[in-house]
Image (cartoon, rainbow, N blue to C red; front, side):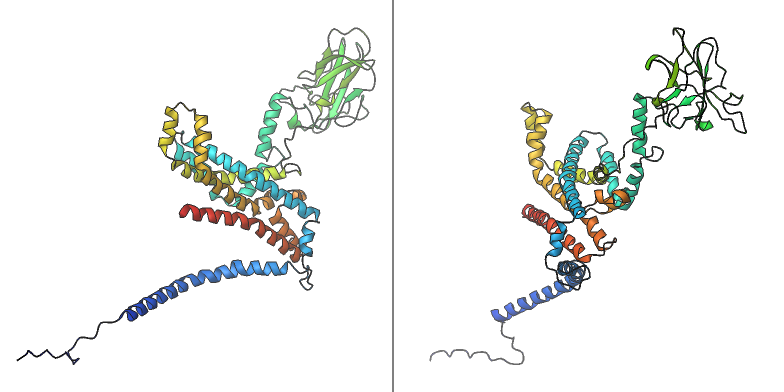
Length: 455
């Protein structure tokens, strides 16, 4: 008898459930992915809302606003963009922005490269980098105030002009008495600031009495002695401060009045200078070796020239370079640190091999270091280009009001025409769109380079 085949098991109360098919597993994976995407959207949503509110909406609104007039009621199309290239002040701002873009990033990248290379050879490299990077911790507002004071033309307040005038006065003697002026009607003729000439000739036995005023007692040299009456036997005279606190007789030497030492006096005959001398501590002067006769005495204008006041850093000609100098002070540390990080990643084997082959340090720098650092240098340069296009704080704070237009850039011009008295937000919006269009290509270039390097 043939064996009977076992009966197929039937599902009952205690039987296991059938294994899920491939479709159910795919559904679970899709549900898991949807949950992950939902969670990601929930986390990203606040940032997207902020981005839309603070970036996308202002950009769209500015583009739309740039197509209307100052009041915002009348559609003018591209008239505001055409006005950018007709307005002299706006063209000057565009020119200044071009100067910034060409000069500042190049200087900063070059300085950062040189300093990064040099710091590798400095014993206290970390401390040196820290000192150079410290200005990055200073706000542009604070940096602008510091440099506004440093650029002051008055040497008593501006540190740069204090240094410049100090160096100038080291090689060229300053005027002895810049504020002095002759007593009117007391024997001297001339205009304030010199030269002064005696109104008549003087000879032996006829000394000249040259009284001056306008010199503060504290400005009289410390070595000055009380004025003395000149020796009547020779050709000469006396120059003194014809002023005494509490009184005194005009045109006469009083006991409390001081001589004016260091004045240059010339003896003139027939319009020609025949001798020169200098007043002594008591103000007297005497010409030796002159032939007997009458001579006019002249005090050259160099005795009364205004003191050298240094460089007008914040004048129309230098205000833009001066502001760029302040920008360099703030951002040099940033460029140095980034380039230094790239320099640390250069294979040392290549440098050592070049040295063993007899290459000089200059050749290694030009032919190995710079080419290997080219990607880093490009990123630093483009980043700085983007930054200088938007510069506003330093220009606004450092440049005084009278030269604000000479130093203005696109960002400051945009603010001025919109809110600083122009009240033309149509033109201001057009300027903001122009600034955006100038910045976007550099940003795209940087993003693509970052992606290429990260891939």
